[in-house]
Length: 237
Length: 301
Image (cartoon, rainbow over all chains, first blue to last red; front, side, top):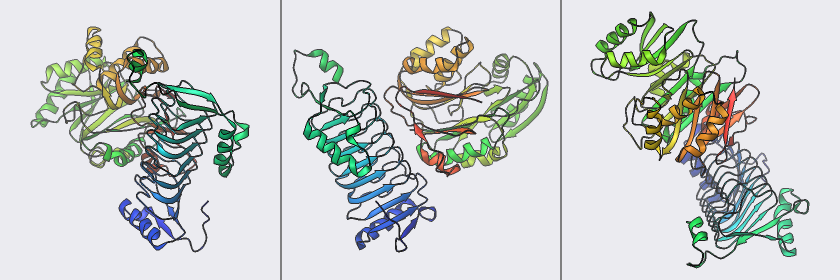
């Protein structure tokens, strides 16, 4: 968690175009600064993107679309909401949103961890190729769509089409599932799953033991084309 | 890609700077669509009067304006006339609005009526919100609610007439703004035309306005009309519809187009992106929420 001390540098978005904000963040990351506070983000798009290093960036307010995308390493904390495509294509690092997230949260991430305290919109974790997405609240329509690897944890409810056409990777969901997507199957959690959930949620003050998680995985019937199951394919395509 | 915004004060007697706030929000969303900007604003209805907005985007605008006023006077008394931007604003004694619109368009060739309403008027033009604001003094407007749009044209022409909002002709005080594409537009339009409705443009969004207003006119509550639209409209959409007392919103089954709402005890704000909300209300206590797929909502003042 970002602790703001006297020595913490501040970037004020109010005075700067987005490109300059990102240049300043890149400079702090290159200099090895431990943390930076960004004020007045104003839900602006494409903030804190394509950064490397171990810098902790804290946004005092909401960020817009594509925040923290394509990052490799930084820890981004958002004291507010975020728009579509949070952390898209991130390979390593951590993103923590205290409010709600828009659609396509953690789309195509390959590594690292994205945590949303509130709800996430449609297609959360779409095409994930690794890493972890944790949603403290509810997940929107078709979350986990075409996941290829990684872990998606939903502490609340899931809207229609959960895990549609996922290849590999695993979804844990604690609340009500409106409907599963094509070829997604629900299983009971194992002891190992329980350990993973406890460890993953503990840092965010969520007690996994108090939630009734189930595991959703691919039924693997879409892995190979089968002319014997035309209905399944019709629903998937 | 287009940007849509809305604002409604919940207290029926509350008035605010709706025009200026919506213009500022549209300005923020300008990058979602720079082709045109438009607002449907709801103000104080004058006693026994209608507000008429007519398009004057033509070389002979002075002659056309005079001809419209003359044609209008054939049906009803013209109380006020004013040119703002490239449109003509008339305040006339109450008369059958649909009939007046037909009359004006028949008498003055090529002229188009943007809106006729007791409380509502549609103000639109090509270009960005700042230009619309300057040309029409939107910041001077005080009202109860309104909706706005910044357009990126995909399916039809870039001109004033094809810009949003669309008046749900012939229904007074109903207007729509839409972000998306209605793929079963032609079928729906034919069906509504068979029911006697007229379309002013070839813009697919206009069909939403007429579709919902047709249901409202049949006595259906706004909520039901919104719900029905989610399955009857095919394609991608997030749209706002405003009536004289309410604002409603619906989102398509795949949640393809963004739409947020933020409300407190005083008002509700609607926008494609949070950046538009923050540009006018930076207070973090106002938390925007994204509509779910197929979700409809409405607010009454």
